[in-house]
Length: 514
Image (tube, rainbow, N blue to C red; front, side, top):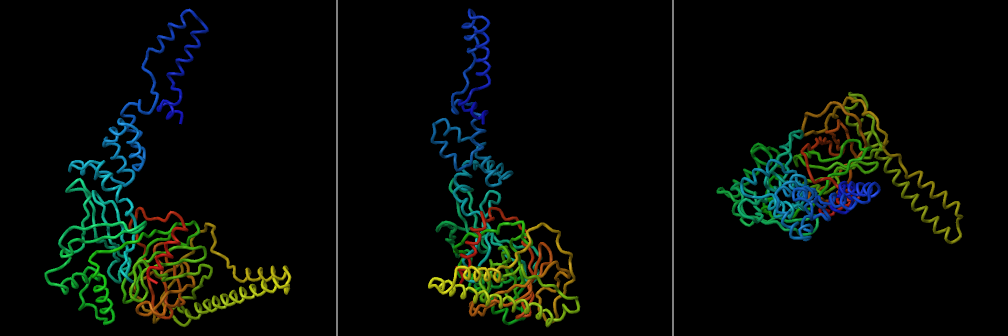
């Protein structure tokens, strides 16, 4: 701080301090020569009295350390500062530190676009759309990641691998891009379709929400009409032709999705979503996973932890259970110990174990409800003189004992030893290649519903933790198994600021599709 003060001319410089000491020594030793000595000492250049007196190269270094949002205010101080802010070094550093641009800046400057224009006209105005978003496409949802990619801002739609290869990497498709190539003004282009970039538009509806619009939807059409568009979409979406899909119900679901999603023509509204915060007590690192959902194919879910529970929320959905809904709810206070391999193959034995826990949960919920009702009556009677304060305290204490359950341990321990695991006979799995060992199992419920999200209900099942990147869920009522694999892509500008903000986002997501 002292150094900064001296640079800005506020504090005492070393040279000034040295002059003062020399003056004092000269006055004490020889008063006759004191005045001449003082004059000789002060013949050097004066030290800076303010920030504006600093050398230009030092000012450039100081200004380049400030955030880009503060530089417009710096330009209002004086003409000198305004002229200094035209220096490319300042804006090049802001582009690098705030948006991660490095080698791309040199290519851009060779192309005639300066760093200042890039920051002021592209990166800063569109910084609010960087990060993760969920498109409003009815029950299907989606995952959009907007990033600074080279000299562009690009909106990438993330697509799951082709069913049932859940452990394959995600696929990406560009939906729009923004750049400064053709003019000094930011240009928005729609990337949807197969005829190359064309005119588009982006509008900020409100905070944490924006919309895209294509101004040339004829670029989305194909010469062969809707049939050619459907065949192309099917090969990209499912990696196969309609003739290769023998299940009639699955064909209907695929055709329904094509008709529904293609009507938007990339004119969509997006709402911001966050990755869940990471806590030391989490069973595994939360984040995004790809999961198998029977004839609906692969879908993307977000795994998060909330004290004594783990929850998986759909980012992509289907006509039965839409995006935004809580697909899995796992009770981490209720572990399930699996029997030996021979008994694991028996679906009746697994059902007995899980349904036993399920009935226990229901009984405790009923007792808690009765206890709450009794507490309310006791309080009413106490108000009328019918019960003592001590009796009311005892009733409250009893309810707490019944309702409070031990949470998962927050102490750091080594992971459990892997145990043999096999699916019961009769349980259907889209992918027969699943892990044959697991670490832990817990009781949980999964959300099922009829077409159009009718008659939704939570049904008991078994959550199986295989390792840090894979887990599964056995749906007992459906006799079906879902395998989930972690999405490993790096997602910048995506983590929630805090747990409260994240939980508010989850509530909003469920309300969008309820």
